[in-house]
Length: 165
Image 1: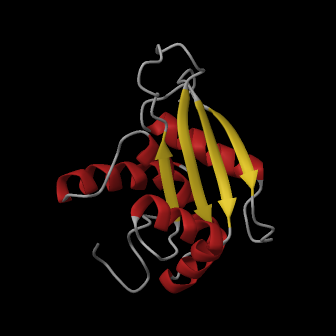
Image 2: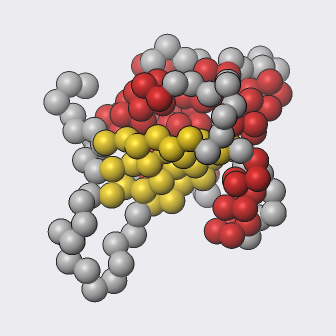
Image 3: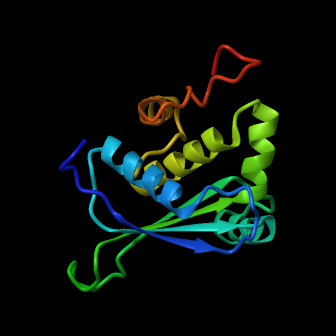
């Protein structure tokens, strides 16, 4: 995958949870996901948060008063600005440490594998992938599986308790 453009990644720490992968690993997962999706140039902010912040964001932007694992906020150029008015911004990804840890345990996955999945999932949302309908979900999940397997992780949709999605 050499020669494929990758984004600049800025990691923001709003949690002091000790179980979070280090910045280098988080950035590697972001870059690998963008390369797997064909490459992209721009800036991505990855914010690591606690449950209070993710709940507030989920409520304010999605109308859901609950925690969630990952939220993605693709950048939208303000109307009326020329395309070159700001550096290429891809958007923000917000991941909740406690939810990722809880889900990894519930799903029988390693914490590292689940973090890699959540980062990949968030990146793909920034790049326009979604899972609202079955066809889109199949496309996104196939890319997630391939991206993670390229890095030595198992299919994130196969848990020890299930053989189907």
